[in-house]
Image (cartoon, rainbow, N blue to C red; front, side, top):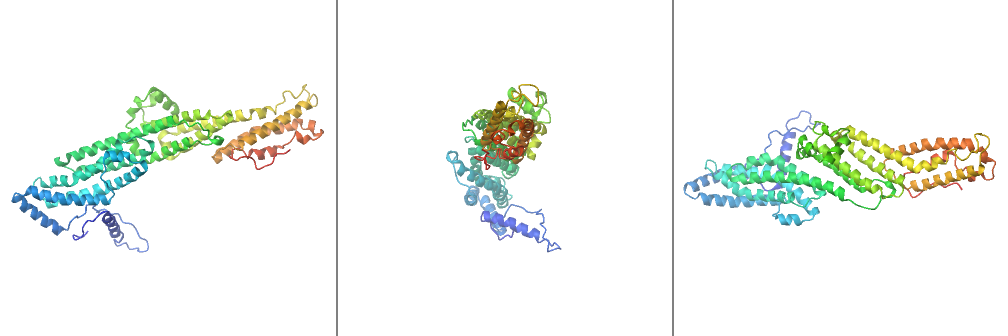
Length: 505
């Protein structure tokens, strides 16, 4: 930047980065057809707020006024002018003078926008505005003992405290799950800037700013942990009594698992906030047992290196969710739909956990165990839904004697086929409207049903169709071939109101 260029707000900052990038990209690369970005190694975000000639003049004026006994007046004039300029610069970044009460009365939609502006203002403010004001104070009051530090404190303290007060207002505001991501954004911003802030606001005159910044960082961390706990409580408190149509994935399941997925954008920060592994030993007894059971271990392993506090929290949240879903599953009157609902939701949970970051944290043991539970729910569904249909294909009650060619009661056999047809049609009608959202799971479930139903039906048909083929209207009883049944099975779990196929009359 040339000495004649003066700082005039955020647009200047972006132009400086652009200028730096332009300078680096024109650094004499021999192959002009293939532009190569060059690293900016000497870029200094501190800007010259005033031309160097003006700074030199101000330095001389300050020296003369101090010698003449007008140090207080000199500092007061300087402070008033630079303070107004700094406040105007922050205002251009979207910083408003808001009380804690005003912040806490805002709707979340409004507040979220102001948090984004606060993050931008903190980054630009600390790295550019406050750092540049500090440099200007040191240049103007160079060699004048004690004046530069005090003057900078008077110029910058109010604006910095205004920014920090906004952080305080967020840290002590009512906790609700939707706030956690923005609180983490604020925590990371302040944490990453704190070292620079302590350098810029060094000295006794700025001790209060440093202490306040450190305190608010701690309180934002506490707010993040508390909001995470509120997330758990919100899952507990969800008592919706309307069953999801077709046993599909519940909105609560989607919300919780997507919430966890987005949280892992902050995995390093969360690990820092939840502390070291020694904290695991302080878990309540029930939570310790459940977490250990989820990992396939006993409680003695909880303090070892294979399980972090964040992993414990994640596992516990999934357990709380599963408990809630168990309750919601009882809203279904049909037991087979209860199991289908549990299968769908647990499968969704497992698939979300399989995302690399989450799986790496809680481990393959958890994934294996809960994948097995998904299969168990699928098996329970099949037993509950198809046991009556498969019972129709047994020999019990059809034969009066042990002979294969005689002793078959045609009346019983006709009734058996009619019962099978009606039971299968009822299942098809109902379960075509049930929904398995995951394509692979839906396919596997159909295949599993077919592997049990079709061989049994083929065998039953092979043993008994001869006894009915000479009857009048045998199609009234033997309505379906195995191929027909296979076709109808492909309608299941599509979430439709009914089959596109027409039943045989």
